[in-house]
Amino acid sequence: MINIANPTFDVAEQEAVQEVLEGGMVADGPKVREFESAFATYCGSDHAVATANGTAALQVALEGLGIGDGDTVVTTPFSFVASANAIRLVGAEPVFADIDPATYNLDPESAREAVRATDADAILVVHLYGLPADMDAFRAIANEADVHLIEDAAQAHGASYGGQSIGTFGDAAAFSFYPTKNMTTGEGGMVLTDDPAVADRGASFANHGRTGDDVYAHKRVGHNLRMTSIAAAIGTVQLEQLEQWVRARRRHARRLTDRLEDVPGLTVPSEPAGARHSYHQYTVRTENRDQLRERLDEVGVGTGVYYPTLIPHLEAYDGYEADTPVASRAADTVLSLPVHPGLSAAEVDHVATAVREAVGPASRVS
Image (cartoon, rainbow, N blue to C red):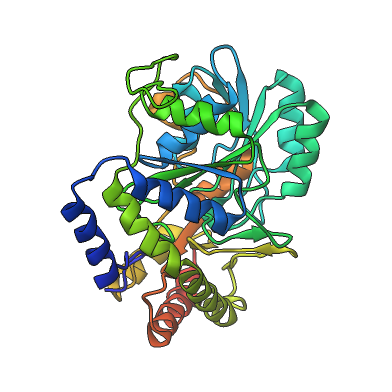
């Protein structure tokens, strides 16, 4: 079976974890500070705050910016639920705008209309599947409306826009290091920001509201959302391999596109000029998505549907409304194919051949 994801670990990660275990400081400590510094340097950001997971990173970013009760945040309905959950967890309310049909990212004009209609306090942009959103447009909207701009970069490690690393465009950004991401710490997250006050507030919130060196100086209500030294040790090693892995993902994506772009009834991913797609997912579209998925499973090709249900249509969001027909269409037609760096060229070709055969003339009858 060619799996949709395949987390990569080697001896270096094992040795890094063993060093932490032998040192005895397995919770938050110097190893976490080391990872924060390395990740901030990699992305070109001034400050980084490591967290227990990607959802925590989103919440810490919002808390650091002062987003809370009574605020509204415009975001996408087509993402993992954590994007909107984090908004609600800080006491704010998500407002859902539609997406761009070519990129699956939040549509700037739809977002602009939502900001105006709701007098929003922030925009949370998701770089879905590892493809950067139109950050020139979103920075312009944020400046026009004088609202915060937050990047959900949970899937965008190694992506860039106009040569600038994703995670450095907004007032704050959040990354996830879940096992299936482009790099992992097992579970973990990271907040990036160039604003020291945002970093300080976020770090304080993630550490029981502590400030300064006194472990019992709690000046605000906080949470325990810290990253462990074990996770940071893994992340430090993984970060060294990230560029190599992203290049492999991009190479596999090009190979898939070369072999699938002429298949009738199938839409392959796009990469707008100036954007560097990091291909957390290689996502195609077809009207016969479920049939294609079933046929690929029969020949040993794993797939994923990200995401089959819009966030405002989930039971947890009963009462929320979203007039987002483009996002609804995407939820019915997207299918992600294996593109992870562990694939061989032969396996990529097998995936492409299987897709071509599965969407042949006989299978396109609806």
